[in-house]
Amino acid sequence: MAATSKPPDVVERLATLAKLGKHEGGIDRALATPAERAARELFVTWAQQAQLEVSQDRVGNLFARRHGAISDAKAILVGSHLDTVPTGGAYDGAYGVVGALNALDLLIRRNIVTQHPVEAVAWIGEEGSRFPLGCLGSSTFCGLTPEAQALALTDENGLTLQQALASPEGGLIPGLHVRQGRAVAAYLELHVEQGPVLEDSGVSLGIVTAIAAQRRYRVTVDGKSGHAGTVPMDRRSDALSAASELFLAIESAARSTGDCVATVGKVVVEPGGTNVIPLRVIFSLDVRSPDESHILCVEDALQKAIDHTKRERGVPAVVERLESRPAAPMAPPLREAIRRAAIELGQPAIDVARGAGHDAMCLARIAPAAMIFVPSIGGLSHVGEERTSAADLRLGVEALAAAIIEVDRTP
Ligand code: HGY
Ligand code: MN
Ligand code: MN
Image (cartoon, rainbow, N blue to C red):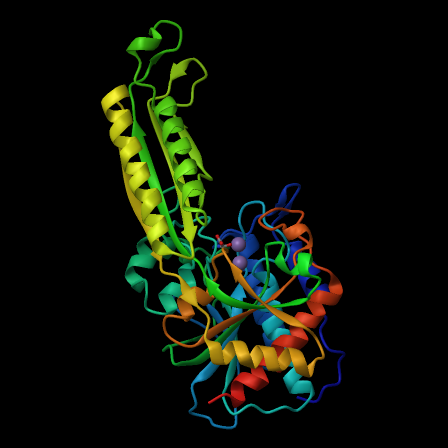
């Protein structure tokens, strides 16, 4: 492609993306909604501008391929996700997708031909905000989630992923080549750190050492309803009071392990009347640790607390495990390739171990994977205030392009 137009700027593209799903509390781009579909369409438009070969798999993951010198070589995949949490920021996920497209654009403009094909990727449904499985697109691509199981997942309105992907306003993008197969030589993901380590250290590039193990659950607590004004306190089986005991047991167990983080992020109280004793509470639980045995400690503590509330309050509870991802060490040869790339750019880079989950933890199960972080201002993420400086955003794209070249040379 003759590089006539000016190179796309990652800051401008992210500002364009950030308008999709924008509301006063941040950005909401849940999978297969019109805003998230519009973001996927932008990916296709930008990929076609760079004359990359666009394809889409059956669950909606998007790929933009640049051929390499060795046509039948496995591809180097470089990507992240375009969906967000309900109050997301402009950078979590989107930065890695735009960064991948812009890094490929840099290679094209500089006439740098890689041996391997390189594909920019937009994974669907990484956040698990609408369908109850995180890394939905990448885990299906990697064969960790059977495609039929993914398509059968239902949202809170009982709509299946398959039905959502069939909807004209939020579903699959029509007319794209259907991507088959999952031959991957290596995977790179550029992401904002979502924590304070880089900012505290004054270094702009982070090389991820490993991604923590993560488990997600749904807990259903069943009590007895009744009139708020007439049932004496000693004759209640209040589902919300019982659930509150479980919340505190989870918190103290996580604290006691020293490195676990446990979060009850969503609580539904039924029937939800101000003068009705709660009949049922359904809550989400997200537990992570670099050491999977510590997650089991929290699971055990929760079960003990459930046994206690059943005995003492007559309120039983059931735990469903929705997702379990082992810790994912990042591939040392790729980490060294990123380190060499940083040196070429004359930039310091430090190792960072982080708790956020990423699509890289799925790709790491089928190929060598590695991640590059840039600083998050104030360590903030999953909030509308998520920020990263323009200089760091641009540096990350240069580092990603240099890392692709280094990885391409790594046997
Ligand atoms: O939950 C996570 O760590 C990721 O943002 N999905
Ligand atoms: Mn996220
Ligand atoms: Mn993310």
